[in-house]
Each structure stands twice: as structure tokens, then as C-alpha cells.
Image 1 (spheres, one colour):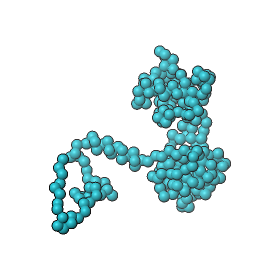
Image 2 (cartoon, one colour):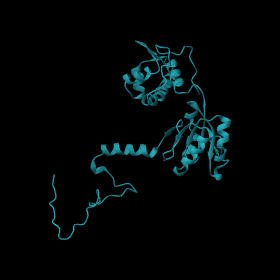
Image 3 (tube, helix red, strand yellow):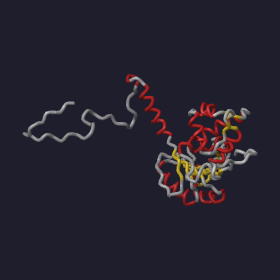
Image 4 (cartoon, one colour):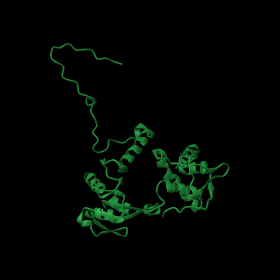
Length: 267
């Protein structure tokens, strides 16, 4: 569902230019805008007409100063002593990040993760319409997932052309991800959301966002390790070798027979 425009003119900077500027938004600000939009949607559904930057900050886990700085990149929408008009700010953020229209999306790789993505209701509610589920495995062709039938991967070019697809999702195993990305780019896809544990090489003008669930879990494990007492830490994970006493760094070369020994330096 896309945001509808309130009856109010879009603001411009003092010089009449687009507040976002030709260079676009800072990446950190861009990453927070969808979070603000989600909070504003919650406020709108509760029929809240206005909110302060501090309220928005509390709902999104940032500071009020950061909210005000982020929103200043879009133009000045707040009113001192009143706050922000929820409906209008919601529309402006949706407009800035391209959610005032529906985006057709193709998902490639309908394994366990692909199934979950195909059934994710958040796509539709945020302006993304899954138009095709594709997989290279003939055994999956014709399978019904989230009300759609899985189609052969070779249908990619036709789907992209017919549905004017610019955004696609890769949920394949890592070895297949680069070939899938190459086919997507050749077909006209210019933005890829990659769930495969692989680094993709794409030409200039193609944007890739990588979602690596195992990496995020490893980061959480690091924080848990720092919080836990030493006696609570468990043994090493499978596949992670434990170095022996002589394995740290480079092994020392054998000492030649008869050569004088140098005393070890001690700190």
C-alpha cells in the first residue's frame, strides 16, 4: 500500500531546489528513514495528528537531535511548539524513499528462505509487489507458494520485461548467486537484495544490499561473549580449530646444532 499525498505543497529549500539535493541523502539518514516511516504509520493508525521530535526519537531508538538533523535533509516540516504533522511527514518520507508507487519485485531461489520471503506481508504493505517466484529446480516448478506458482528461472527475462521489474531478491545458495545476479542485470534489474552468503560483483549503476543473517548472529555472539563471565563460556564451535601452544603466529625454525643460543627476551 502506497502513501497518499496530503493536500499540501511539497516544500523546497530557500533557493527553490529539492531539499534532498542532487547528491542524495547521507547513507546513515537513509537507513533511518524507513524506521521513522514505520513509527509515523503507527502514530497515524492511532489517529495521532502531530508528534514532537522527542516522541519520534523514543519510538525509533535515536536522539531527538538526530531526528531533527535527519528530517532537515528533507526540508523544514516541524512547527515550533507543535511538532510535526504526522500525515504530511509520513508522505514526505515515503516520497523521498520512493514508496509513493508500487514496485514489482522478483524473488529467485524458492528454498526455505525464499518461501518465507514470498509469504512476508510486509512487502505489500510497504509498497513492494512480488510478481514472480523463480527457481532453477524443475521439481519446484508449479509448486504454490503464498498464492503464487513457482516458475522456471529461465522465465526471468520475460518477467522483468513484462512487469517492468527493477528490484529483485536473491535467495539462492552462494555458488549460484553471481550467475543469478548477472542474468538479472542483463535483463534490466538495477537493484538487488542479496540474501545469499556471497559477495556479488555488479556494474556501476546497479545497487546491491546484502542481508547476511549468520553475520548478524556472529555480531550478537561477540556482544554476548563480552557480557558473559568466563566460566559461562562454552567450547569452540564446530569447524573452528583450537590452536595449540605452538600454533600462535609463525612456528620457530629449528635451532642449528652447535649454534649459540640467545636468551629469550622477557617483557
